[in-house]
Length: 354
Image (tube, rainbow, N blue to C red):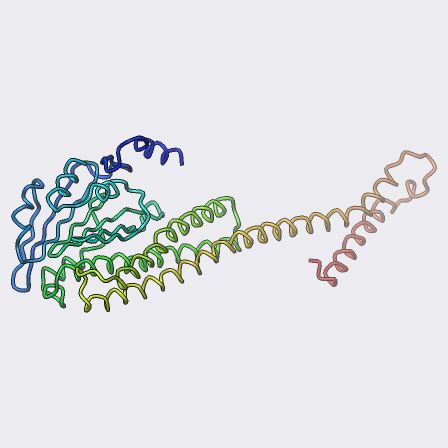
């Protein structure tokens, strides 16, 4: 929380629309990639600067410009000026702690979503802000770092698979949103495996490390939930919207993404309830282990109470104690004490206390 407050502390007092990058710098150099295509041709290249995008503005083809890295606000501002994007939209793009949302304008639609991934090495959930501007014949996407879940979309564009090369920019925007939602299922599968593993460890070995892992899982599902619930509202707005930028044929595919989002929400809620119940299971397991330990200690103490009494009696230093002069007195006392222990163990076994 303290690091978050340090990041956003640069914003208060500035004029609305002032571009200040809020978030972590995740790449050293901003990368601009372009894919321009129609049904017959495709051009893919990496651009050196923003001015290289200008020749593609008035082409009848569909142009996809992807920017990796948001810390160079001058570049983001220049892209916005070329396309005619409102300064407040650009401000939301570089402010990387936005809630997923959708805003409609006359010439474009602005979308913010969270792109999630699971870091296998660190065994934790990674979240990244993804921003998209949908225009008449272009799509501009903004990411915090290099690497995304859109490689299958690029592969379909390169090979001309399916209908993506035959459709307009709204279908490309749908394909990108669909890739994000489909990747949620992959992340959920990883988290589900983690939940099952922890659930087994809770019963067999409820250690403090398991408790820490439960808390980490709870935070991850809270983050997941905050990312997916607003997305349902976003996709519902796109599906029901009357924007001329989205064709009626595309709304059918948006409805499918909406259904997938509902499935993700249901799975997240189920796993979240399982993680919440893990705390009760952990406390019960710890309590049961403690009860087992106390039961063993109680049985041992109970067995030794009469034995200690006998030892105490014959440990008294009185002169006139008949048994002290008996030849078989010492072994007889041992025999009595062992017999008492055995009888009590048999009794406990029959009562199923052992």
